[in-house]
Amino acid sequence: MVTTTAVEEELLRLAGSVPDPELPVLTLEELGVLRAVHVRGADSVEVELTPTYTGCPAIEAMSVDIERVLHEHGVREVSVRTVLSPAWSTDDISDEGRRKLREFGIAPPRGGRSSGPVTVTLGPTRTVTSEPELEPVRCPHCGSGDTELLSRFSSTACKALRRCLSCREPFDHFKEL
Image 1 (cartoon, rainbow, N blue to C red):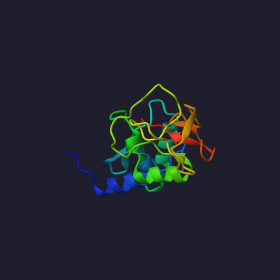
Image 2 (cartoon, one colour):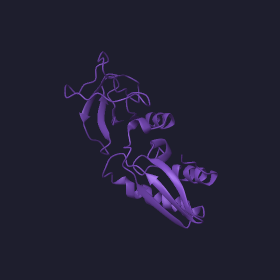
Image 3 (cartoon, rainbow, N blue to C red):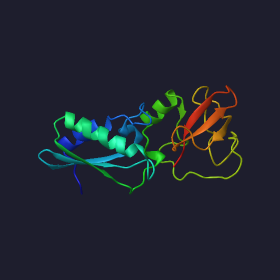
Image 4 (spheres, helix red, strand yellow):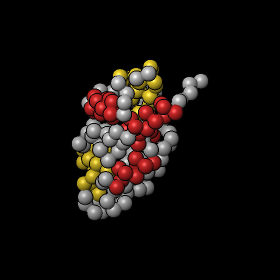
């Protein structure tokens, strides 16, 4: 059994407060990519970080920002290790993170946390509220579930571009993984 010390918990809180470079409205803790911080010596720590997907270009910026924050708080040696297992999932986004995404105008992933696997269909791109297997992607502006997919990729690879058919506003949707 691995136990976490008070120092590691404080360092985890500090590292977790770093904003995501692609979605600065979220912290790394809220995004769920920060896995652990381990004290390795008097002035040395190792941070475990899981990217949202393998090859995510933001992982380098995240690592640099974590190192900077921990250096500012007296840690001399910081090593950030990329951990791919268990893989990151949109279930790892905190409830607070989902709320912030919505307020920022990005539809959060469908389903609640720990909702299980996401059904993937290759059918029409328009979300219909009567669709039994998936809840609709709700517009973060007006709340309507009457939305359509415009592009499978948006400003980042982990988001899709959608449009609300009620208020006509385009919006990003953080894709379910």
